[in-house]
Amino acid sequence: MSANLPKKPLIPADEAALAEVRRRSRRSFLVGGTAAVLGLLGWRWASTGSEADGISRPLRSVLDANGQLAGEYFSSAHLAPVYPKSRARMPRTNGRVGLKTPLDPAAWRLRVAPAAGGAAREFTLADIQALPRVEMTTELKCIEGWSTVVTWAGARFADFLARFPLADAAAPYVNLTTPDGKYYVGLDMASALHPQTLLCYEMNGAPLTPEHGAPLRLVTPVKYGIKHIKRLGNIDFPAQRPADYWADRGYDWHSGL
Image (tube, rainbow, N blue to C red):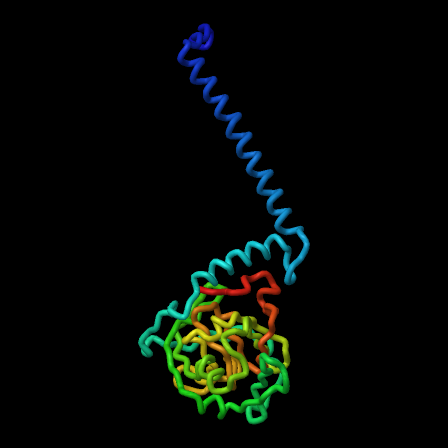
């Protein structure tokens, strides 16, 4: 019987509430739709602009802005945490770019071109090992999301340049490559001279293994592992910011922590 009863008319308060619900629904739809359109346009702008260093210029601009902030924050007083040696572990074998060509460790040389120009100099592993030995236990952080505490040993890059003045702090950049040139890393000079940046030849108390960069690699724990170039073969000091393997593939050039 109740189905045949006439519907109760809305009282003024009900009408006001219904109108408010309708108004809010329309506004939410318009705001959400506008946000979606702007997001789509923003992505198209970021992904379809002209290219710089191999990726779209808008995205590169964002990464460069992040890099500028990192540079302003960075200083030699900004040190990565150190840990007891008991916490050190063997890191993953990760990345083989620049390591695939067979290498005779006895024939290996580090070739360094002076910032002022002229003939490059070559150094043996013994030359590096003759510099003051520095050992540190720090965390190796990978952009893939994993990290491992490792004990590294080697010579500070700053000590290398102090002993062999092939460049000074006025040089803006350092370019480092594997002997075959297939993996390459760029650093600003302040990062290269950081007290925790090592030309490293030992890991966890033993010589580096081939898969971890023997005979010499870079270790700089204030940067992600993509900057820790393995099997270091060549160094030069360009006036312009050098290319970087992973920056060319869309990652931040500085890659600082």
